[in-house]
Amino acid sequence: MRSTDTARIAFEAVAVVVVIVLIDLTVAGFVLFTNAAGDELQKADAILVLAGEHDGREEHGIALARAGWAGTVVLSNPYPADDDVMSRVCDGERGVEVICVRPDLLTTRGEAIAMRELADERSWETIIVVTWRYHLPRARFVFRQCYSGHADDTVMTAVPRSYDFSVPEWELTYAYQFAGFAKAAIQGDCS
Image (cartoon, rainbow, N blue to C red; front, side):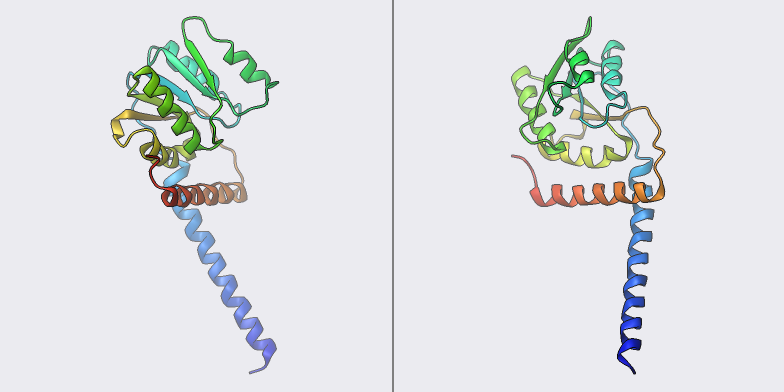
């Protein structure tokens, strides 16, 4: 067998493995993340809106408070000081207490730790967490590690929006979520 044939066979084998991994990632990602289920809403001590796009999440968290699900909304605010959306919503809303916090760690883990500290100060137990639908499974995992190990203490709900991602964008989203799960598993509990 010539070396060019060996190289071609090796390249084809690697290509097949890459395709299989991408297919597996796509199928598993679709099942786990694309249509991840939120929890049934229940009354809580506070609503935490995780940072991300300004895609209506801040307004959604405040609307949940206005609807009576909690009296306080905590907005994760890692944005620059001149962020228009955060400047507006951090000024407060009539009838709703709004607290804007900048987590020490600008990650989901950092947000969970910051919320645990705030909950300890205010004697909160149950919180509602607002995030992207595809982020719900990982956020749930991280909050069980760093906020409370009791499933009933965190109610996960998605920002009401659709995601018009291309296939490559979904692939990157799935890969990011899987990597985040692996990182959280390696880091372990926050205690």
